[in-house]
Length: 129
Image 1 (tube, rainbow, N blue to C red):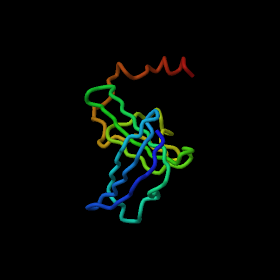
Image 2: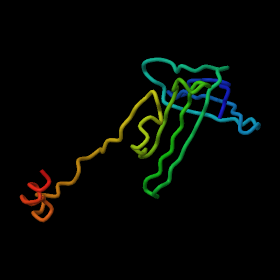
Image 3: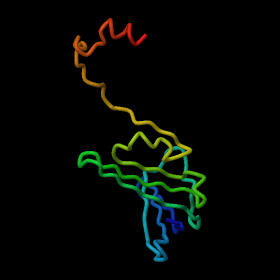
Image 4: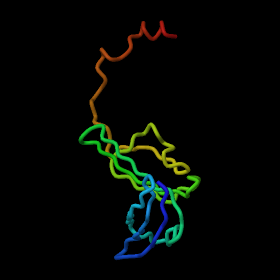
């Protein structure tokens, strides 16, 4: 949805952005708060127009994903992305030009040696070649 930034303030280490968004012709006040970056200010300011989008997936009760993106009105520049949960790997360009991939935080379990019944037989290997 198209929004106008009303104010950008720094409060207790958080950048708080107040916006007014057009929701099918009805103005809606919204707020976005993010931790302040140590390397500088955000790239948006009061008076800027931005495209704010949110999404939620609930494929499984244990796998809820929620996210917010903020882009320039023409959607050519990504200004902010915030995701909570496990985003699906089949959409690595959702946050273009920022690309991403899902990585597991722990190693896969060690199942031990592969059972002989799961290995291709020598004759099957020769037939495939």
